[in-house]
Length: 216
Image (cartoon, rainbow, N blue to C red; front, side, top):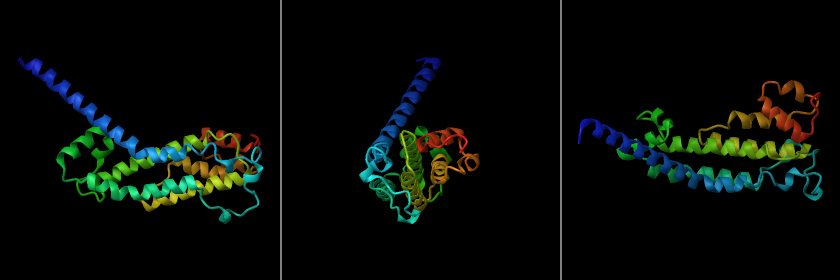
């Protein structure tokens, strides 16, 4: 075999192995994320959001914020996330050179991990899962058709609960979810002025869900 042919073969093998590592990592993520995804699918159809079609389950807008408790779908997600570190760490030890190389090939985030970082690769994977949770949650929230005043308080409570869970894990809510929580708490009168620092897309989407006119 000539040198040029050998280099092409090595390149082909390297690309194939890189793809295999990425595919396995993606599949692993999907398996871990599946229970979260199942719960988040309930967001758009939750009875708490409807004050028109289901008046019996509608939430009173007069209740103070501390009267609201996070709903079951988000507490299920929170409990699941809290169990992940203990399940991930045995499989993501840093003294496994082959696994270390495979993870770094699969996702660039593992490349940024220093050798002595506490928590190791488990924390990186947990961060990826948390990011996916926030993104999927935000996408599902934006699919809600209508939110009454009481439902806004309830949804903001749910988002805050997830934020507390992530904080306990050393992580944080995405900027977009934090902005959604802020927008849900603004009164219609102050919405136009106090939403100016948020994403225009989120401002418009939440305004439409809450039936707030552009003039506030």
